[in-house]
Length: 625
Image (cartoon, rainbow, N blue to C red; front, side):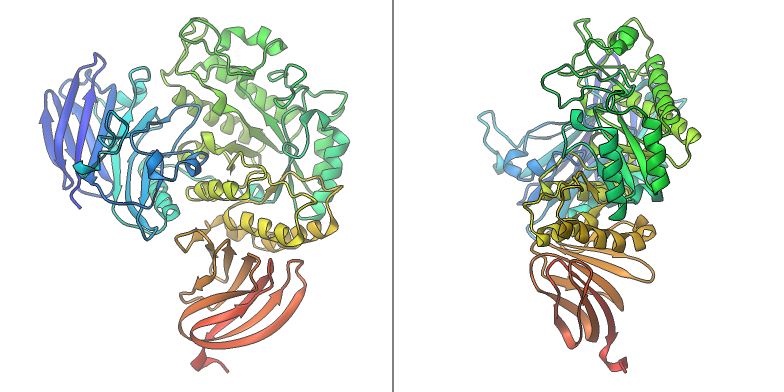
């Protein structure tokens, strides 16, 4: 496939220089006072150098043009939250996708072919900056696709007119040069594997460390989904912790509302920003943390460190540190104002807030939320200073400073972020990345967590609510589906949950807990529909069969476990040589359901309890005794 590139360079005065018809092989090109050097490696290195060091780029645009052809689906540049609503190309062409402080996106687009494998991927690897993606020339002025041109042009803009590239990015080198890498792939496995490869390239080229933290991988409970925040109290949380610990849950999030009225309150103004306990409901928050710790669990406290609601003491105290919009007014986000993350003074306040919560209430972790609520494009305030011109860069600095401060106080501190403000560039400042928000939407949660799982071992499912209306088989299928892609997480009332439902969770949490250290290695989908997932270790392999998954393709696995997240009572196993299978079956409660042997050449049908699991030992038939 013939691929060509174009690059636009804008200086601070708005002067534009365009490099056209850059071949995929690369080379050195000069144009109007700038030099562009394109390497021939993978990903391709693009270095832009001004003739005068002071004439550094203020915006850069990369375009990639390929022949148009039919694709199956598209994975848009995304945080992992909204791509599931944009799979189909009829809604994709000529739309803009912005990566800004309210939604930090992976800067890559992936097209799957008719075989559902990756057919084309295009992305840019560089500093975390405001970025916009769109296709060009595919839609006419009447809104119809112009496919007769037989060309697909994709464009990434790094920096916008109202959000220029951060100065520290453009002045890093003495000669004013900027280096980024362009990722282009024309083939691959499923889109999760391609996204993982892109993230791996990001880590390598940007020297990013993926901080994996074993306590963060424990099953998790949260107070948010299954309760109104004003109904939560200290005794309720303690009782949920007691019951949850019996089921193998170790981490417990006390979510929004512990300080007073939360975001889900309709009748009264919320109290975001005034982060001291509501003494009527939480008379001894530090005591609650100690009680849960003594039982063997950990208490994690919710906070929106930048949020300041109207009428709060925080508003009176912090008015000079709020984001001010282009009209000169505090930027109102619908339910709260936001502290300015570009301001070192505001960041210092937020870091001190986290220090206080960890020490005064002795919690074992922090859930930081609502950064996706920062809707401003910039801050015009003259009442505080700015040490960057980028809200995205400001958020990165804030999260780095909080991470360092929290770990200095509690080295084992759990820090949860949401996928809207993660990716490998911000996820390194957390120990857990949640795929929010998808309550009562197991397929949406699954796909979102699969996206996060592609770039981090610390992917966490959104908090699943299991109801009394769900059958035991449905519960088993839901739990297995969560285990396939990330840390299992729930918002359940365990005092009213049927015992059968609790027994199923207890069984699978025990299975997970016995292997939790092994889940530091990422799970991988081995089919194109993401219905068969593999977690492979030196001494064991686990397969998760989900949805329409029916066939398991073995390589050279000699022993494995199979978790059946479907209602079917069998699975087909393909294997390269004649094989003898010795199988022990367990039902969804972990009770023995029989043993059997199968010998087959090429393909075997293995009975498996719906919602249950198999422990399988496989040997080539000619060596089996």
